[in-house]
Length: 204
Image 1 (cartoon, rainbow, N blue to C red):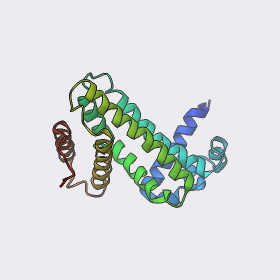
Image 2 (tube, rainbow, N blue to C red):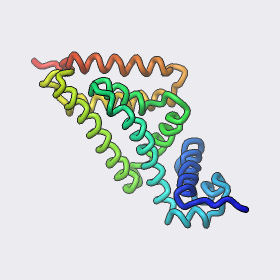
Image 3 (cartoon, one colour):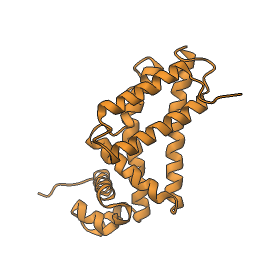
């Protein structure tokens, strides 16, 4: 008797195939036909679950964010907001094969978002959520007196996200240099500067 595959399972298979195609062949290669071949089904089955390619790509990008958000959520009950922040930052870096795949997908979407408003909007939404999560943890650290009450949360949120983006990109492009140990060391150094609230802008 053939195995019955439900709607959600088939959608997840399509998205997993989309990730693989985007990560290995690029965003333009992720056509409905190519995705269907990767899944091992017909193009008609793919379009049964998604209206068109754009819908598949947005869903695939959203799933990258959801996967990272689930990992980050597992640290939210750890107590110390600053320790939680450190754990959350490590969760989004490409420290294992799954997260390396996520970063390859994320980078591919970055490159295409400038010419595709629907992708740019999705990236904007995801970054808004990411900024809120980071700034929320920093404000919690202020309330628990782990960091200075005068900490410029917006500035340090921007610095932190820029650091993680840069590290993730370089770790994908230069994995021999940016080992897991190296990535953790850089993030730990950043956290030390956050604790010290170093004045990064010289004033005269």
